[in-house]
Length: 202
Image 1 (cartoon, rainbow, N blue to C red):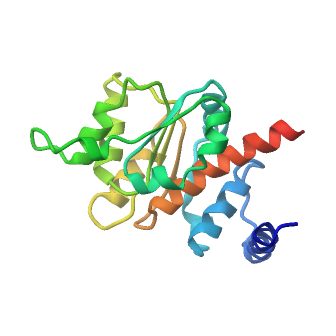
Image 2 (cartoon, rainbow, N blue to C red):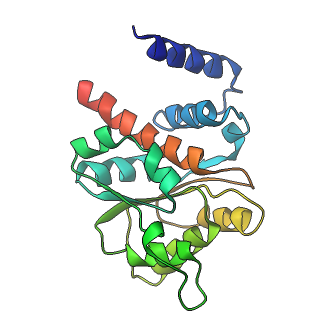
């Protein structure tokens, strides 16, 4: 076994031994562990929330070749493109192509610009305004992603936007409170991709 794989395997064994054994669905647990691995923070065992259909919706979207819309390039850089491209999906990131328009932030404009790009998953790790805009567009019926991953970090609207997402009827994965960030969003997406890879091997 390669050294890096050995280290990751041992890391996950340590994480499993230190978790408080909260009850997660079978497919949720490896994603929680992957977030803890990415952040070194066991608070995510308590903070992560999953809509009951979240994992199934994400897998279904990616298997059908849909794309992942991200709020910032840091999220785009961390997603396992090799796994994603096996099912025909792409990462859509338009933040570097836009400026703020009509009083909107660049993150809001970037989300609005990409809603027609065959989006299956929205993965937000940085900008609360991007998450708020995503929910607004969905509520207006203008945008219909299969899964919203909302994990912005910070002190202005981060906690509030994620709390709002946790109450939505459509599939979501979020981290309550101020903690979050691009590593969390990336870990969730890569966790879903790893689940898909494992299902292929069965």
